[in-house]
Amino acid sequence: MYQPTPYDINFQFLGFPIRIHPLFWVVITLFGIQGPIIEMSLFFIEIVLWVAAAFVSILVHELGHALVFRYVYRVPSQIIFHGMGGMTIPYIPHQRRYGFFGLLCEVFLSAAGPLAGFVLAICFIALLVLLTTQSGKAVFDNGLILTELSVQSIVSVFMLNVFVISIIWGIFNLLPIYPMDGGHIFREIFSFISPRNGVANSLILSMVTAILFAFLSFRFGGMIMVLLFAYFAYQNYQELSFRSFRRW
Image 1 (tube, rainbow, N blue to C red):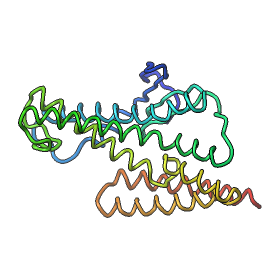
Image 2 (image 1 turned 180 degrees about the vertical axis):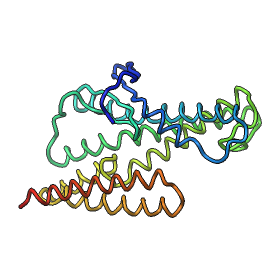
Image 3 (image 1 turned 45 degrees about the vertical axis):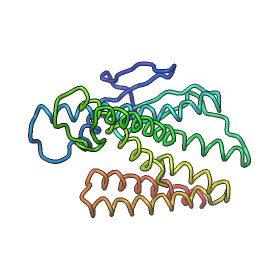
Image 4 (image 1 turned 120 degrees about the horizontal axis):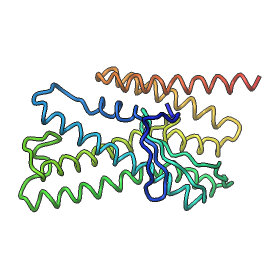
């Protein structure tokens, strides 16, 4: 999933190398297809706006992590877009701090992504309110559906998509499921409280939470999310089993 391919897109932004795996575009497009296709031209524009908004939201999310690596830990990093979203990888292992201050740094590193997304969402919804107020229209007149092909409607749908994706992506990543940001946060907290059993306890919490959300996704018809949460639960079960085996 993370290995380079001949079809990757590579560029730099704010000094950070960025690589986009082709699977990212496929998965994000699938998430953007909702409901029946009524008019192909509008459907195509809506998908393009959805993918663009998702890219911007995830890029800002990952930049939050990358900036912490750069300015807190003083290590360079790269951003990779893959089939499950994005990830920020330091080129060299960052030097962990110890004690309560070290815990705060690690928690901030994991929380920086969602926080950056929330800031982006606030900025975009404020701009959207300003834009629609000046035109005399309500912000949510058209929801997320284009009803007219004007510059303002296209910009408004894009901005509203960025707002929604940034909020949902941030909340989703804060769930206590490893390897998402929330899983990292709870792993650090549990390990600080109990150095011996903290990781195992965080894996149990992660696995139970993933199973719960897989069930909820199945209940409400989100099969892609069912598979995703089931995959997370299996990953955590494998790591927990491996750690239990090593104790013997």
